[in-house]
Image (cartoon, rainbow, N blue to C red):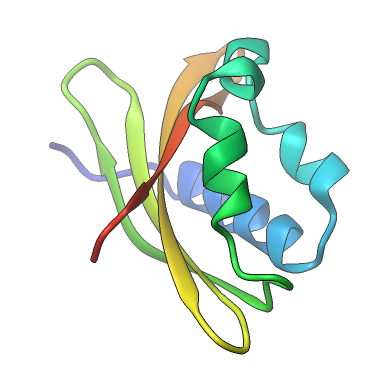
Length: 104
């Protein structure tokens, strides 16, 4: 795994902030069409704290195939949930192709 381009970290952090702000329309813009329709997407979103108040990028790694894997911890009043998202390059930037909840 190699160092991650700071622009990618900025994109991942901005996505987390959109979720924390409750701007799900903005957050969905970071998904590919396949990512929004992935079988894990709905159940993963359902496990987020309600409301989400914070988003912290815990890990961000570039894989050998060029994709990125991010672990973002979403915090609320009563619980936090860590989501693993896979980001793949589409055009000029990476987009989310799948998400899942991870135990950390």
